[in-house]
Length: 215
Image (cartoon, rainbow, N blue to C red; front, side, top):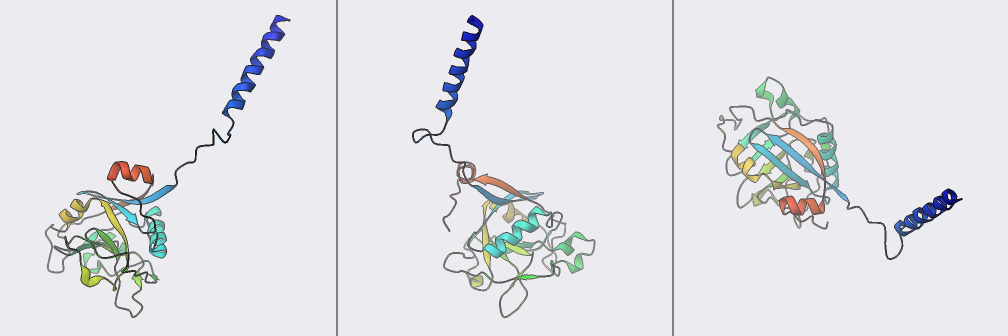
């Protein structure tokens, strides 16, 4: 009898405790913070962390897709111009022939998403390279990073800016100062490894003092 009564009392306590843990108006289920996707670009000179603008969805989706598939791994920064920019992302830069660097792509172009009211060629801006075409369509993979302190305002309106560095501008400015030939090709290969990181707005603020913009 005592054993049965003890079991009944224990079950009552358990059920009461479970009831207290149920969500109520006073005790709502905590909401998980939305994940943000950022690009980590590792080089021999350090890491660059890239924020992709949600206001350029075609470029953002394409870059995230290529990065997650490993497309950029072992590609190089094949063009460096001090006081201007560093350019990379060409799949042909993986091969031994350095004469064709800068001429490759994934076989498609991306429609222009140029918005000079929001996205400009400021220091640390990420923009899509392109060949000359009336619609200003972007290369499907090649990009450049602005290293000029005042930016490169003369490019605004001509190329799609689709992101910015939130860490590693010093890395980009170190890369651009490496020895190069008369084609602005670095004498030594500057390869990259690119990954997609999942973070939250809180983490970005605490770790990099970056405020996620409302776009």
